[in-house]
Structures are given as C-alpha cells and as structure tokens.
Length: 474
Image 1: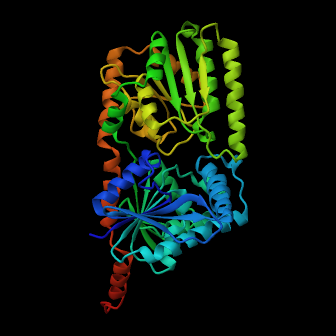
Image 2: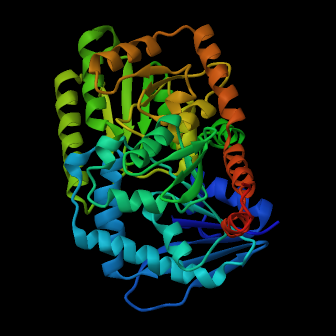
Image 3: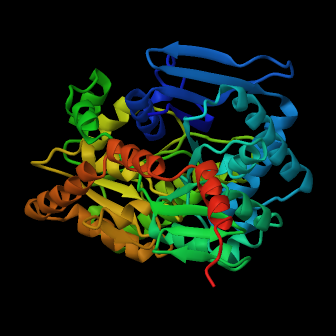
C-alpha cells in the first residue's frame, strides 16, 4: 500500500499545538498515521527569499512546508482565493472582486506548488488535495506527467451554476477539477451543483450515479460530511472549570445562556443573528433579565474591507440593542471580538443552555457538532441551527431555522429556552448517534478507501489503448 500525500493551503506543524486543534488537522493526521506519508502546504510565512522546503519528520509522517513571497500571497491567497472564490462559493457575488491579474497569480502559485511537490511524489502514492485554494492543482500535476490517484475534498459549499458561472474563469476551473480522480463534497446539494455546472459547459456522461466523464476525463464524485472527535470533546467539556469561568457560572446560575462562536465572517450571518435576538427580546419580554446572549467572533482577514465593515456593524448593533433593552444589573448581549482557546470553548459550550449556529451559508459547520458533543447527556442544551449549514442535513433533531427570517429564529430561541428536559435529552441523543457514526475518523477513512479503489489513470489509459488495438468483429 502506497503512502498518503496530503496537500492543503496551510499545514499543522507537529510542534505547533494550537494549529493542530481543528477538524481538518485531526482527520488528516489520523489518515497519515494509518498509512504513513507526507503533509505538504504553506507554512504561513511570507518571504521574498527563495527558500528550500522545510521538512520535519515524526514517526511515519513528514511535514514539508514552504513560504510565499508577497506578490504570490496577495494574488493567490488574498485577492483570488479569499476575495473571489470564498464570497462566490458562499453566494455573495456582490462581494466578489475579480481581477485578471489575481487569477493569473492563483494559477501561477498552483503551478509553483506542483513543481515543489513533484520531486517528493513516489509512483504508488495517493494524493489528497484540500479546498478552494487548490482547484487547478490536479491539472498542474497531470501536465507534469503525474498519473497517481488524486482526490480532492471541498470544505466549503459549491454554488449553483447561476453563481459559479458568473466567475469569468469558471470553465477553466471546472475542466481542471475533472483532472481529479475523486471529488468529495460536504452535501449532496454541493455535489449536484458541481455536476450541473459541468453539464452546462460540456457533455457529461454518468455511469451509475458517481462515475463520470467530461472533457474526455474520467472522475468520480461522492459526499463525505466531515465530522469531529466527539469523545475527545466530551472529555474536554466535562473537566473542571478554570477559576474565572467557575466564578462566572456561579454569578449566572439564574440566567439562561445563549452562546455562539465563530470567526468574524459575512457568511456566518452575525448581523442577522443580532437582529433575531432583538426580535426575541421584543416578542417575548418575559425573558428580560433572565437570559444572556454571548457572541464570540475573533477577527479573520482583517485587512479585507468587507470584514472591517461587518466588525463595525456588529459593534454598533450590540451597543444599540444593549442601550434599548439593558437594565441595571443586566446586559442582554455580550459581543467579544477575541480569540479563546478551543478547550476553554468546549467547557463554555457545556454550560450554554442554547447553542445558536445560524450561518447564511456553510459547507458543514463543525461548531454545531462540537456544541452537541460538549453537552451533559443528562441535562443537555438545545441547538438552534441554520438550514443553510451542511450540518443541518445530519443534525435533524436540532431546531432548524431560516437565518434570514428573524421571527423564525426568535421563535426557535423561545422554544429552546422553554424546552422540557425529556425533549432535550431525546433530541441530544439522536444527534449524538449521528455524530458518533459520522465522526472524523469515518470521514477520512471513507474518503481514502474510495480513492484507493479507483484505477490509476495510467493503468486505465493503457487498458483503453490495448482495447483499441483489438480487431473489430464484422
């Protein structure tokens, strides 16, 4: 069995404990430990010097990282990945800032990375590429003669053709994606949106339901909803509280807590969420003085104007809502533009009566799953979840809402705050069954198993050429 080679925009170095906390890192490391192999990606450093790859080996895993120069960082990462693909894939064409030079930089960096990876690949390796930064990466490898099995997993949504086709280089990106052997998506809607986009541009032949050919290239598609480590999260959540959190819990023992945490991003629906909470206070005054909503949203991509705008908007809305509804001794809304360690958040999740997760569009949203896994099974909180998060396809026992409908969210919050214990326990148990079944190890092992089962392209091409030489029957 060949090695596994993982390629992602960023890597989680073995000596950086903080970077290894997220779901991607956990899943990738689990797959690498099982097969042995290489994790290749950007170190996060920016340097105009042409430095060699930095390699670190621990056991059967090697990490190979590189720096980007300032021009490549701006064009590939900031201007195209995060100012074109990210907003478009989250259905925000109004925020797309397409520049031809940025797209050329995106393609240039993908080619550069293929050149850096090429000497590290062995003939029987399988390659697993991650996310929107690397859409054309397989094409660059194929152009260099690489016939290894190459899989791709998209962590964010794939937009419908009406959205995707608005991107000027959409056809080039689509054809490049078909150079992958296996394309994995978070939901069936994302998979079908991709196939609809392909069929709108060329003849798409589908054999069965998951095997396809387009532009003369064979490829497979499937759905692999990413999961978490529920037992690990439960262990972190159940441990003793730090002194300050214990004091806060004691002070708020008669207050029901609504809690949300995500990075500051326009896809998360934070302004809409603040207005929905205001609707709750307006429609259900019996909760005044008895609830508190805490929103943690650390800054991300702070140099981008759209992110600066949303931060200012949230600060303004939080002040207005507290000014309107606050009382002496009661502040209804706490907005914290700060980063907290993940292990602390798991403990906070456990003592939150309501988890409020209402993105406008999200590939999966692991926070929803983490909130459920952190709960005390004997006295769990209630998850209020957007219908536009991929997690809503699995966590069907949550209170599913339309984040654009503030009254719908307000009504769900009121229902969650008043939900009887027996119903809370039942809903939590149903969601935990799904979370355990589709955990992070199932995600990575399912994808790797399917990728290994695909016939390598060089073998398939040789077979097709051989068949072509057979004499035809009269």
